[in-house]
Length: 623
Image 1: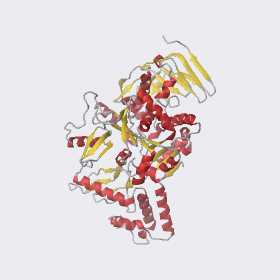
Image 2: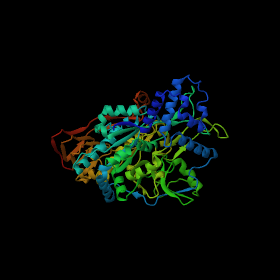
Image 3: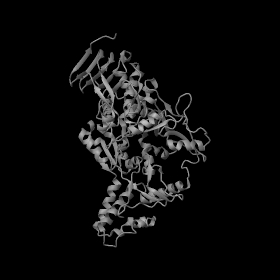
Image 4: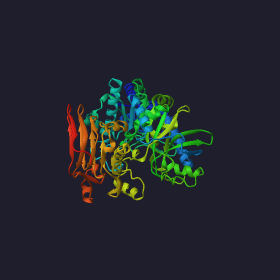
């Protein structure tokens, strides 16, 4: 348990070591014969004569075994897939040719705060003790202008909780409730897929933070390996300049399924009682706002795969959930990437392409937010047949009109959400859509790119929009329960438009879901919060009956403590979000610069109860 890499990769290194201990020459290794048979003679064409450069040759043989072990079906399958997809790219063929997209008819549209949502969330809470979490985190934040791992970024400025800290907080809160219900200690497992780029950084973050309160043995790190780069349309593996190493590139977050299979993690979790899996990514903490309701939908309708979705603007750079129907009669519910949707619609008779509907202002296709719930037995059934392989794509940049050479080496890529295309015919697949304020606000683009997108009216997907989406979600949860929270208004920071309203963070230790939040607010109509206010609440021992807030308030009950806010009016200077000047941007650290603002905490009322304390706040009646 703890940190593992692909078992197949370890086995490959073991095999290579054994062969070399027998005194075999690198030229006689079976991998050389295999690759020659696959038309890859060029890999060895410039090798020095036998007995020379033995060390370099052995390192290359070890690398080739690693590449062979870390792809379902090995290098033979990789090269075969590459040649097939490259041939299609040469001929200009659309991989979705013959398929017609439509909106799935059996999706579930849930509104938080309704009885329907509460019913599904309650069912999700019952199923939560058998839930495992899987998060690919193989990419750095360089596209954001951040050089570290994205898990280390603050999800918001009110608490400075990192993305991983937020995820861990929800896991701890839900497993605490599951433990109380089950009458035993429940630990919900978490698997994180790392890469060469992120593995060391994530390990340091976990160690430095004490795993954010999670037990070490409930966290599994699955280290992803890269795949061979391809140098031409014949599928030739690309060599480094010195000729003794294959160039490699990332394969994509779809590798998480191969790693769940090849390391035995999925089977181990099933033997430990995990019946459900929640897959999500490392770019948005709003995934946690509704995952229990999604789990409830999966359980109630016996879904093998439940894709989580939100309203999507036409041409927005996120994929869609679509019913794909083929001319030969085949049909499936799957992800279609945004850059495939428009040409597919035009090619199948939809002359307008991807447009917003006049009544809703959104595309008719639900936006796929790269979050889904899988039934474990169905997952294992597919893994046994596919070894975790998902559909791939390739995007070569051709350098000539004949489309035979590349401007730079390319590679096959895969995405975790394309697992939907591998489910079996008897598996039930559907989607669950939530409103935009509980949707997908990823932290992906640097602030300059985000400002340009914002000016075009396209969702910027920046650090600032992701942060204000957190506050908006918590405010919406309060509002949907009956609290009076002033709505947000548009505001710009460094050219990026955000919806700026009350700065509210209801930490998972206080309320990990709306069902629990409702119990913490016995009289939600007696809660009134102004737009300029800031509210942070921590601890399961907090209950708020009556609150009027026009300023900043933090309430924290440590484990074993309670705070009963019976009546409280707070009016103070509060907090100020101030845009950074050009000079301040140049001097700011990366975590601040990608947001374009700083928070000045002028005045904050704090109410804290230490372990064993019971605090009653009854300072003023509602006016």
